[in-house]
Length: 187
Image (cartoon, rainbow, N blue to C red; front, side, top):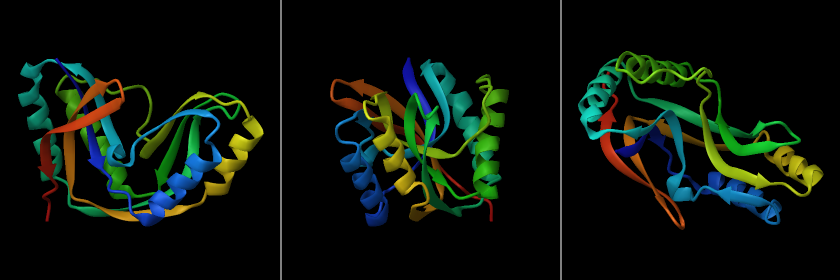
């Protein structure tokens, strides 16, 4: 059994890291588990604990997705939270509206649903988790820090492949190991 997820790898540039580091600095006294820059990604589907014998089914589903998808550019912009402003759970960077991104996300969910990995109830919302919140002591300061970065433009990045990752949980944080990569092909 492997803990698997499908994602786009994001290589943070200087502008991205400037906002990321500014948020970390502003919220340094809060209890937040920050995602390491080398682990930043945009999840398309979390599969969870998956038996090895399911890998061929996943491969076929993702090969079908990439056959129908051309590479595209994605603009990463905006900062927000999941959860309420009184009990936030996650800090994320978002993406500018992008039809290609939405179609890719939907195709991944649909193909995997047909392959036996049911869709969640939630709609696909493209985002990059940058911090998991354990506890916020100073809610007003937290809300001000998020608001200060709400409209940041972070970077434009090419989307030319999707990756099946294994998540290895280690004492010093998760390690994401690529299992298979699928280049976007449609011309």
